[in-house]
Length: 387
Ligand code: CMC
Image (tube, rainbow, N blue to C red; front, side):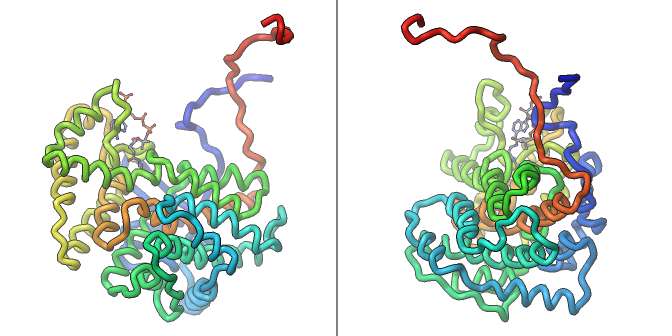
């Protein structure tokens, strides 16, 4: 079968060509379509960034307004799906609800199940999913709290509408902070969930199944699930008296599977530019909301200790995007088990842009890696009685 190269975890394998996101891990550079993440976080907004990722250029004023209207027009879920969400147990993990409900959209939009969506179909689906996944997340929260759903309000910005559907109110500055978080999460080249989207999409599965696969990949705590795990880790440290030393020792112990959550990254080996922006945002949000969260003090102490520790220095382990995001979500009143669903809201335009690029790439093939076989050589079947 020829020569096969083994690359566990695809550390050094380029799986595609892409013009969406540029990342330089040594220098801590992240750009969407050439625009530095720092500029986008400061000046843009989430729907504009979504457009940029998908179409490759910043939208004109008219294009952006049309797009905002289009996304806002998807302000309802099919009735049957509302019922499904409302019958999940209140204790259900929001990522399970989100993944199931996204896949379930396929039952209601069967015109979009064909293997070869047109450009128009793809554009429609992009706006539809941006609108409806937001509804699913908010509905799932309201159900978990035993509360009635709140209708989407198309006069509000994307982030403000989301907060309003969650809590029945939304402050401008808080919505802005959420918007920045979504921008920072919007794409990250060939990460685990984007690669999953590409793998599933490469079989020409429909978009609902494809995005549902991305959501599932994001759920794991080595990936998007880290934001929930970070907060649980910080709570644990707080409950044990606030001493971070034990967590650090546990993370360094090779016999112990525990890792310092929110630390380390496959590609960033200097710093994560998103974490830098989030740290500033975190201080701002807590000040604005007048929240004095001891977890922030613990997180800052833990970061300082880790950055001075030989184990972390030697392995170039720095805080990643998830280290501080949970503290902001918590201040916004979002329950810990919903943090990864917030990541989904942010990452959705990235997944859709990667899917579009894949489906329009004439060189794209079905993803079908090989293996190095290490099992038994040929042997003969033994009847039951002879074993
Ligand atoms: N705590 C303790 N040790 C660590 C950590 C950590 N958080 N991260 C990496 N290491 C060690 C690892 O044990 C290995 O040590 P050694 O060389 O002695 O075997 C070395 O550092 C290199 O790590 P690796 O596991 O080979 O690195 P990777 O690129 O396969 O994994 C990672 C990257 C992000 C999965 C990993 O750093 C990790 O598990 N971090 C904690 C979970 C986390 O915060 N994930 C969020 C990532 S950013 C957002 C996202 O992707 O969604």
